[in-house]
Amino acid sequence: MARSSSPLVNKGSPTEQRRLLRARRSSKRVTALSPEVVLDATLPTTEQQDDAGVGAAATAQKQDATLSDETLAVHAGEKMGKNGAMDTDSIATPIVSGTTHWFKSSHDLIAFKEGRLHSFEYGRYGNPTVKVLEDKISALERAESTLVTSSGMNAIVATLLALVPPGTGHVVTTTECYSEARAFIRDKLSKMGIKVTFVELNDMETLKAVLDEGDVTLFYTECPTNPHLKCIDIKLVAELCHRKGALVCIDSTLASPINQKPLTVGADIVVHSATKYIAGHHDVIAGCISGSDALISRIRAWHHDLGGAISPDAAYMIIRGLKTMALRVETQNHTALRMARLLENHPKIEWVYYPGLISNPWHHIAKSQMTGCGGVISFEVASELHGVMRFIDALEIPFIATSLGGCESLVQQPAVMSFCDVEKAKNGIKDNLVRFSFGIEKFEDLRDDILQALEKI
Ligand SMILES: *Cc1c(COP(=O)(O)O)cnc(C)c1O
Image (cartoon, rainbow, N blue to C red; front, side, top):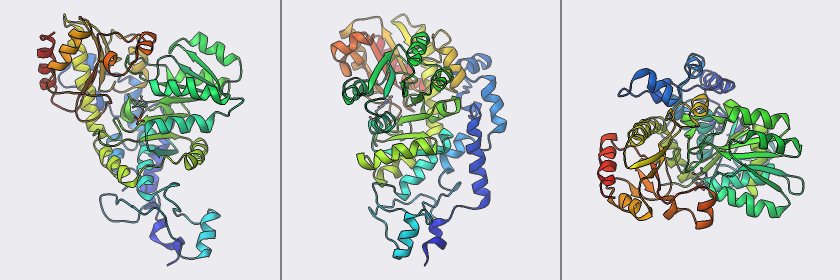
């Protein structure tokens, strides 16, 4: 059996190929999400559309998109767009557990090395099951290429190490940003001869001034941010950065690929902690990086050395999780929005942070680039540290745990959970702040639970 003619190089039927290609091409457009993602039958129609961020633009894109995210989440990388990774008629993608792949002959090995024959070589460089997952995420992010890694932090670190050269590199990041990523940039990158500048998330004047120095390699931030759910105008930032030759990398974890597609509004790289919405079940740690072939192959080369390969078993779990991502996120969007509205008017709540609320200062930005605002809300309870601990301890449904995006609701008090005193003060984390990550439990059950717990303060 000559490898070149084996089903291993099956690229899928021409129809499948064209379909996926069309879906990918639609990446040039703003978004291809279906408006249903954010519709909530229980809310007034006009308000719900406005509030959840479905702009006219998003609706107009619908006709252009060949396949919706709901369909891509199920089929991309598998039935649609077979990529040479898998030769199977099994509906479920098999877990290819081999750590190495054999060649039929030395001739085939040479053909592989010369790029004339598609194959896998060694597990750290790639795996058929992992490739299916990468192609599925690429379809959802409208990316040319995706690299799946062993964790979200691995994705972030690999991206920064690969794209920012020591000695001449300059990273600009924001004061509110995933705390471990911020600490890595501040404490580690800066020691590698990389210039590091922090700007306030929406201080465009300072960002422009820093970019004017002319040496910025990469702008990195998170959108929406954790725990205050602030949003940055990705399109605007990308325009400013690209004018000065800087790359833009967005950690889009809190949005999920369902609610936001940074590449379609100008970002060069999007990273996720796939541990969160993408895997969706609080049972796998993983990360992913999506962007152009050129950028992702630069990161892939570093990844080969860093060795942050994900196991094929974990990749399988994520492929399975992704099938229901659109359904899960839709439910989480609705629950979070309804709860945010309810809490906003509750006498025991001082402030609710959620970009889906019209009162939120980032609402207009969220509306322009998101089709739903995700399942995480933060709020300040009208009480002090211990009163809020009593509220949290009185909750019956959510787990007291860090992380977000899975089927189970999680709750945490960042003052207790995540931040040492110094960090807390710096990032405006108040003692009475609560972060809720809604799961897919019934809204009414979660609502009743929160309302009863508020009475226990
Ligand atoms: C969890 C998280 C990360 C880190 O991801 P891991 O998978 O835990 O390594 C990075 N960014 C954001 C926004 C996160 O929520």
